[in-house]
Image (tube, rainbow, N blue to C red; front, top):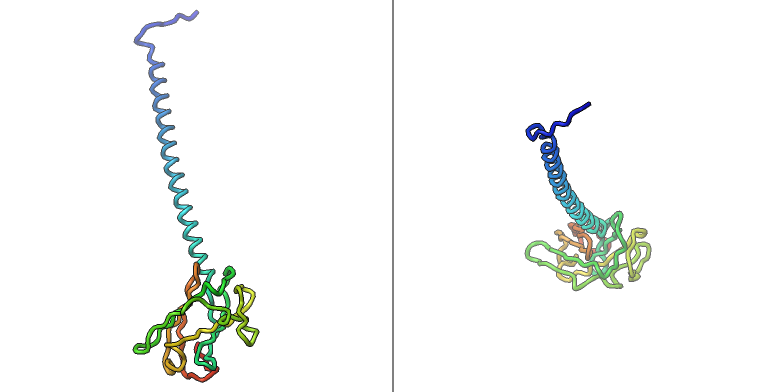
Length: 186
């Protein structure tokens, strides 16, 4: 038969168990707080990466790629363009341009967005006034310059920036060797 020992000095197992349980619960609480901080940080990083990715995608996919350019009969520039790979549909009214000539001639900004008379399908002889531009077709756009037209810039160059609202910017240096109709500028 077993005899129970109710001596106070030998009954320390319960105190050790309670202390271990307190340490265990505190470790669980610390781990929960640490995991909450890690999860919150990961979510914030993911949101920042998503925003940066969306902005980059918009900038690269809303852009024009210039294939060729010529001087027209009026000394203006006709550029043959395509939408950059992966671009969304672009409305011509959301496109503007800036033209910088060599020193002494000046700087020119578009009077507004491209209008119906300044955008057309490349396959058509006249500017047809496209309502929207898609990646399926090549287009021609008319840069009707006043200050930096081909006559003023002949034998020199001009810097052209084409801006797409909520998209990217295309830069091209136009090298105008002659102001004759049909002369290449790119």
